[in-house]
Length: 233
Image (cartoon, rainbow, N blue to C red; front, side, top):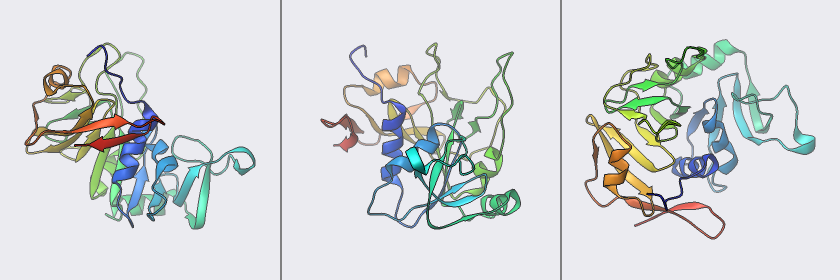
């Protein structure tokens, strides 16, 4: 395992971006998920929604594009696509709660094998509650993708048999993208779709509390000469 290089946040975001289908309406949550906007395939029309009231959000703004009144959920200045709209929170949350989002992409602290998600507060003494619209996004979208590091800084698993932090949503997670693997959550099991090249299922299980299964050999996540990730059988 010492020779394995974990994916960085941008590389995880690139993998997520490549999975989104043409025509999808997608909310990007605070933190790592907002990076997905910078890596969407150019041949697909994907409509990005931000909790603060933007529909038709574009990539991160640079140089003269920066307008600090136009920001994403992470408070980063972004661009707007032609035809974008800006509404107040009532309409934004109505879209989230009304089942109009195809995908909600959220950060997470913990995910359980039954799809439970904890992402708004930890048990640290100095933890600050930050629920925002996460509960609405977790239950309102047709599909929920969670992006997170596979373990904590001290090596403890984040993919668990049961979450120990207060829950954001019960049984809501469909897919998990980590710095080590891509995992589908179904039937109370973590199904491994792909792992970084050189990592064995046994090594991944050692970093995961919940049970991992692979019906067929997982795809390999490899990097090209430009350090861009892609899947390889």
